[in-house]
Length: 65
Image (cartoon, rainbow, N blue to C red; front, side, top):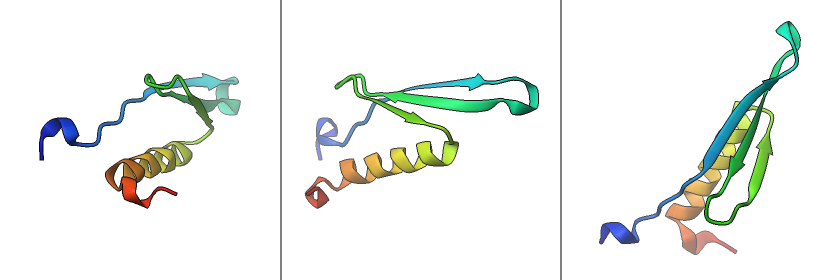
């Protein structure tokens, strides 16, 4: 397979803390440079699930609806 035909994903991931001391939590924003779409997450687990789903969809496009 030609390398240019291989699936490729690109995301800009921003992470920042909100709150103070023991009350602080992380926030996550993911942006697609291609479409400028944004997704927001409040946990690493949700971000990981999002990335895994996109990897699966990209690797197996025939499974899309």
